Length: 634
Image (cartoon, rainbow, N blue to C red; front, side, top):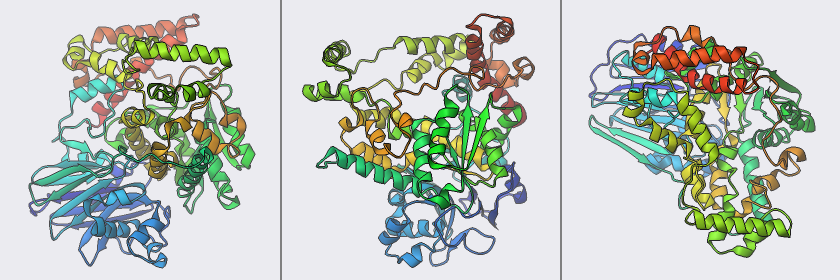
């Protein structure tokens, strides 16, 4: 993690208690290493944990961040490089050199060779800044999928940049305005964004972008990488696509196993987490002996499926959490401390139980299967049918439809009717499921009617629910629909929550090489006779247990520990004293009604009572998060 402050006019910065910054950025556990440099008009701070990269040596010796002497460029990063061999060769370095160099040194060399767009030559999970004191120039770069966060504040006089908004707030204090429209969207769980934060003038650097500052007035934000316009790959046999995909997948997992410590793996029993675990475990006994899996068993079949891969590879240590996870108010506050505002994705603080266990075993790396069905291997592969149909490839469409001859004919006819009714599959229709979800969200909101109208939240909610409406082209769907702010926002939230325990998340299925390959492979490789993700399933066949590889859906049976991972918070107690900002936005009558309904439903024996209570709690939970944030930190 890092923090950077610069007076762009080269005047002296105001005095600060720099020693207190470490407690702000690391409120749970101190980092293993830290580096700091303070000069009159700039300040740099960087922290790191153990040996988690391929570089033979750690950060440059001494207690200051890396300083490239020939050019005077200083570097701060939260990063890991996964294509060290290819990058080193492209930089004309010998293997003995590029395996020795720290990431920060390679970032400088890449910048000197390719300039501000050097990020497109680097594979890994990174955010970093380069500061040239002599030229009064700063370049900030974030990786293509946003694996590591980077936030900034910029005026003509002051530039602040950090991996957490907490650092920026530490500097600015109360001289920053909170956006009420963000609060309104957060209450509906719609606050994720590529570039916005809850604070005016504090921004995220979007994934695949660089920010370039020179002097006191010049500031350029530009994109250096795009998923669009990738050429379509042509290979002689369909098996060739599978082999190439498996090879790239294996490389994506293995490159993230570098660590001198035990390695954690999230294991839900689904295809994605099982893929990551299996490809990690098959690497060899040395890695396998250091693996720890982490599972939450809410549903009846989750223990069976989550243990299947561990049993197949004899993974020695498996941690299973049963029952509702303990998401206490302290966990919410910890997320606020680490990020500077409430986590937009509850999955981040739900994993707190994993982190506490992992810390006991000195685990500093956590592998996650997130990004597989969400983006890289796309669960909506059935879009292939629409794509083939529109391209008049009727025989191929018919061949890959599931069922016997009669059912194929009926499904083909249904596809033709849908094409006619939806203007070539492009006319969006709010289906019953979407409408039901909208009704539940809208009916349970506690916001005042004038707030709902002022921020056009009804229209925003409908657009949000319908954001993944299919388009009849798989590549287009992945780039325009699957790739959404949800992905980098979850990465930011999870990375920061884990960092509090000195744990680094890694996301093999969001490896940029794997994503580029999937987007270049013909769409029809991804679907066959009812099986979505057909390319991925074939590639992991024989590596991941068969019952997981060819499981038709995600259903893990009935839940056995209550509905949903919600702690039984005393909403009545925690929402008794609302912050003035929330008081001004919340309809007190609606709030009291929701609280009374929860109390009544808890006494009910109706079988639907638990679900009704779940949805009311789901709408109140963001209000609780916001209130804790505003009362105690804002």
